[in-house]
Length: 157
Image (cartoon, rainbow, N blue to C red; front, top):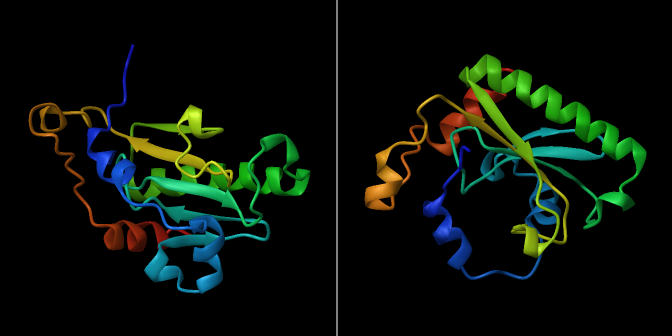
């Protein structure tokens, strides 16, 4: 069984939470470059995760603040499915990963960092992307800055 270990995310887990929702606030700011919003659709958008498991770690979220998958409107669910597909194509062209982890955590108990707002993760994976650094030094090597990842992916949209 393969495992995706992410001990470097403790910084995120331990950080003080502000009131509000990043998936509601960031799109309203209209600062897409600063907020790493990569793509805007009609009902959903794509944003880089600022605490990535790997380079190019994206999240797809509806604009609507909704926590339950079964309450999502059909047009939004369809657009999100298309965005997941489109972003995998973009990531393949831009970064040539060997595989992907794609999914979501529903509810705080399931690991949702923002349980009140549905969002899907797309994590590019490369053979050998898990190495000794997280194990012996509690450090994850992310080889590309968020700004560089943003610009690399943006070119393919």
